[in-house]
Amino acid sequence: MHPTKTVFRLHLVRHAEGTHNPAHDTTIPDPPLTERGIEQSKELCRDFPFKQDVGLVITSPLRRTLQTTLVGFGKTLDKKYYSANQGAGVSTGAQLLAAADVQAHSTRPCDTGSDISLLHAEFPDLPWDTLGLDPVFPAKQGPYAPDYEMLRQRGLRIQSDLEHLFQELQSTGRPDVVIVTHGGFMRFITGKTDPLGPAKWRTFLVTFDLDSGMTAEPLLSG
Image (cartoon, rainbow, N blue to C red; front, side, top):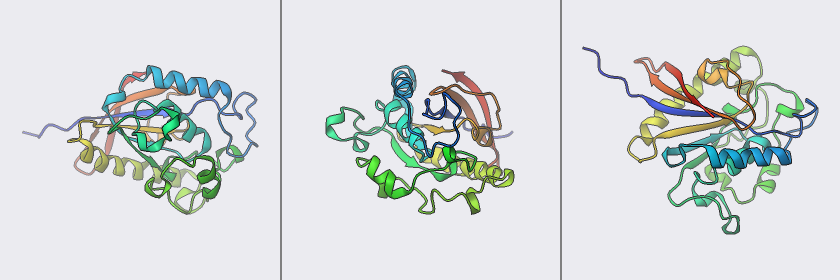
C-alpha cells in the first residue's frame, strides 16, 4: 500500500499593470505600476480569499512585482515589512522572500531589474538583509540567463525549494505559499500555460513524488 501524498496549496499571482503594459512598450527599464495597477493590487488585497493561510510570499525583485506584493498582500504579510504609518501588515503574518529565480524571463529593459542599491532606496522599509535576494541580481547571466534551458532549470529549482518550504510551513498554521511573478515565466513553475490577467491569481494543489518531482493541479482562479 502506497503512503498518501501530502497535498500543499500554491497561489501564483501575476503582477498588476505596469507602465509598459498599456502601449506594450518593452523599452521602459524596470517599469513601476500605473495608477490602475495600484488599484488592481488593492483589489487583490481585498479579494484574495486565503489571507490567513499564507505563511510565505515569494516575489520577483522587479519594481512592479514588489509593488504588487506589498499592496496586494498588505493584509497577509507581517507588519515588519511596512513602516508604522502605512497601516499595513498583520501581527505574526506571512514572511517575505525576494527571489531572483522568479524574475521575468527575458532581457528586454522592461524585464530586467534595477540595481539592488536602487531597490533599497525605493523600498527603504523592507529589511533587505533578510529577504534572500541573490547579490548577482539583476544580471541576466549564468543561472538567470534567458535561454529556454536556463529558464527550465530555474523552474526546477523553484519546485525543489517549494518542497522544503512547504514542509517547514506545515506546523505553523499558515501552510500556503504565494509566488508573485510574471506571465511569461509562470509556466516554468507549474507547467501550465493558461494566461492570467494583471493582479490575478490561480491556486494549485501541489504534490511531490519520491524524486521530488512536483505536480500542480489548478484548483481556483481569481
